[in-house]
Length: 502
Image (cartoon, rainbow, N blue to C red; front, side, top):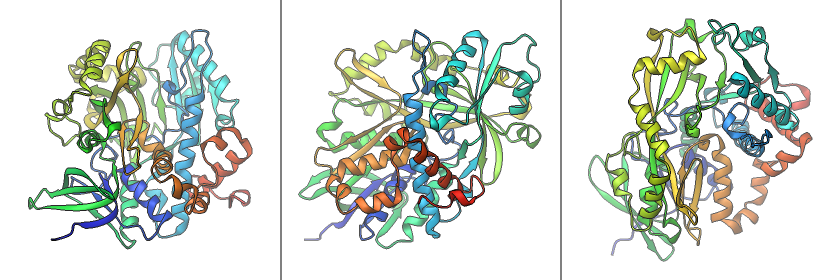
């Protein structure tokens, strides 16, 4: 009887999540045998593609929805601080790889771009002032600047100030050490680095058609979409990092932990400008507040994007709705994901989120002129001929059971792992890509606990001199790590003080 091929790890999806985990595992155990399986004909073709995501190195510097304001006016900065330190952990990994010399240039995927927050009206200004007051006391945000002076704002964001009413009440904050990250370029650089090592393969145009338990792990059935041939691979560990396709695969696994999860797909659109005469006047990512009653993913922002060395501007996002779980998926994805175990939570979410449904319908029905009106609240003198509509990637938001409401719609990411650690899936969306490394470290600690605290511990400490909790509380160490990462990633020029962690 013929035996199946055998590997240690199968990773489904060749996006930023799988690429990061595969490279991490290979660094921790060079003898590990792994295979990445991708449905498309290249890596980073879905959510990791630079035009399918916002590309902000999410660091909590400008995203106002990460700092909610309570009824008494106080601003909670916990989430912003946590995301900031998670991004520093990502930077530690990229710095480590860059220093190895075989990884390639960091300039291909990370660029310094200031991060700004911009608000309008008395309520917006009082919120931003309180946010600045609270955040700037924390060492991760001590470089933040605040202004209500329009001449200063005209220097910070020259595209956005001309054409505004003289009596308009506005304010802004700025952090100079923000970044723009091309996660597509980073993903493909990680995959190239991975396949230069022995026993590491990336196979394209392959669809996972089955997941079955076996004695030592899982049998993964893989179909070649061109030839139709199917092969079975036995793996000790399986990672489902296939973006929107992770949910159906998680359901197919049948693990107890998958019960009750559903997905709510939301598509995105952007206005894009490539006119160099416009682009040169806006070198920043500027985030504002979502309209009252709008969901978190609707926070408007005007971003400098750097893709393959060329700068463009993106404004949005404009939400949309489709039943596909992937941009290149099937309209049957949503209906086929309904199960006896998740229909209750899904119906509860539908009942409790009518406002979101109305919002999505209104966004889908918008004309180009209405989209330009939203842009002109940011950039009053925007001309229609400079902008075109770009369809972004799919985001499958998580639906999960809730003891009180029956089901809740969760914005964010969630790691779901089998009790025995043999399979894990990543569900959800933003701020996903920017905090990938932290999520994959969490996965390693959850699914390989003995190795993480044992034979891999020294290597983990070498790659990651400081993790999130320490970075959140130790100001001196945060500054040292941050300065080192910024030099290693060529975000700033080196000085004598910033050459090593030691």
